[in-house]
Image (cartoon, rainbow, N blue to C red):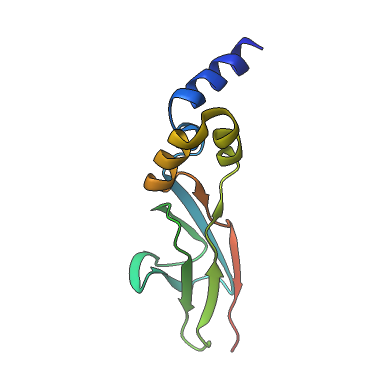
Length: 124
């Protein structure tokens, strides 16, 4: 009970999602077959690559969606759309911390999350 009260107090004074969820996230990409090269694209810019799947990459969270394009010789390019979603701690932040904490989390991306792992199938 003491831990909950302390967490509620901290979330009320600061940005709860920033503390609980963080501003970055590791994304894992699995492809069938393995060994694909995948580019993560957000707002038209490549923000990272997984040079050989399966693999992972840590990205900065954002309200903007990510498109993952995977290629492998002998296969068609596969595209996966990873929609930016609301992080679980955001609801608690709004209830406990009000607008100030939510505004901080929204500004630094902590109130967002992406689907992981991503399982992508390439077709010959």
